[in-house]
Image (cartoon, rainbow, N blue to C red; front, side, top):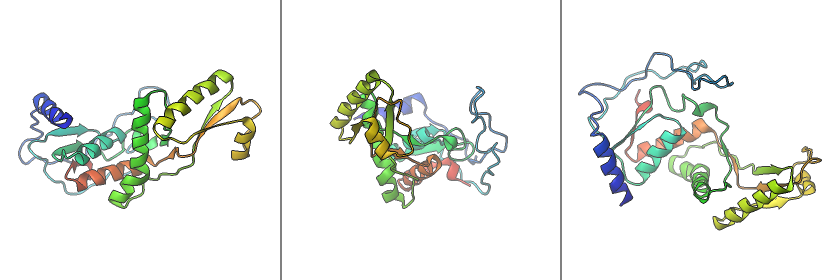
Length: 234
């Protein structure tokens, strides 16, 4: 029902004439713009940082599609993957350079499952399952997932009480977590200075991923289900 509504909404909003007949999707040769206007360390795109873009023959785009996803970063790749998995295979992902060439490639890749909102917790728990297990099973590729655990640090009682609420919410979704004393935290992380800590919340199944590797896996899985990922067309 929801997918039928989504299809109708996209079709009504854009009866997508993606391209003139014979036009081909290609990588742009012009320099990509900065990913942010603010004075922060990570201002360059992957291409500006000196990474060469792929070159070679291209394939023509279809004349129309049910859904067009613009941007081959983490959100775009997640979107096209889940649409394809739900059976919407007439999907095109357009990326002007290559996957993760914008802001995604230099993100930290942290995945912490506990949040104040139950919607966020459910979404992050699902994402963890996709990244840590499903994608590797589907594609044979590794997302760079490392289950090194997450540690939330509290310097006062109020913050630790908030972490206890997060722990209670996490239990509803089957997320294992523990409130630790400073001494228990020191046992877990011997190099950590715990003199100014009130306590911590430890989530053993949190971890990190490789953002670029994850997007590659998402695009590969979506492509195998029939989606067309533009940045793969050389």
